[in-house]
Length: 305
Image 1 (cartoon, rainbow, N blue to C red):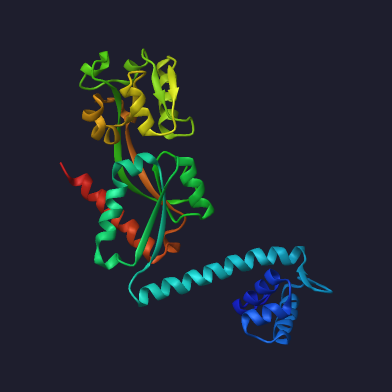
Image 2 (image 1 turned 135 degrees about the vertical axis):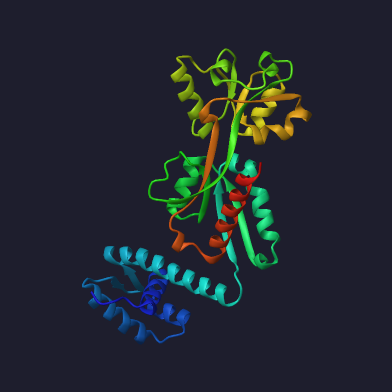
């Protein structure tokens, strides 16, 4: 098969979307006969009919629908290339969409992104952040709904590229008067005598806790299941149960909510996050700059005493 040229594919998409060669010609500022000629050459190139002519227009065949899907993807990629090259020529600009777990956002993602955007060199870059559980982050990156993701590094990163990011430390959060609140550190097994407030099973933390409870040969007594860390803290504040949460997230609320935050001593309680993306070479210039900024920030934090 000869190479498919983008101009012909663009005209093919326009015809499929308008279902009419004359309207597509008007939209694309080209005569209808020229479009018809290109479409005939396209069908000859692919070796199969792509359009069915009707009295009031045209519609794609099954092969045409398949080519339409591929053509849209190729044109979108071509447009992305043009935008990226223009960004290099006129100073980096663009939009970066990040999918991140609540733990990653609470760790320091918001601060890192704010610092990135304060750099005058990044004045034309917009960064959007959406919170998801780890599985949702990875699914979004694989499907292309965002270019950068941050999640627990033990999630299934198969097929993606990644860079190490920061870490957090799980801790027991309990009311100040609770028996566990007197400890400086705790092993997770010590919490299994008490009812706990948990996050949904799709979240990373509950999976870790259920596994640790099973290894200890004890059931995890889940009294309340909530959707957010904030809700978990409020349940603990009401003295209904204890919870295991990232210490970095709970500590800022400890004084105001009358809570004690006790680090877990288990090895698995120290978690590492990963920055993930489909392909480093496929990142836009803006996304590449942001990833490099996040990596540098994480490396600097690791060096701090």
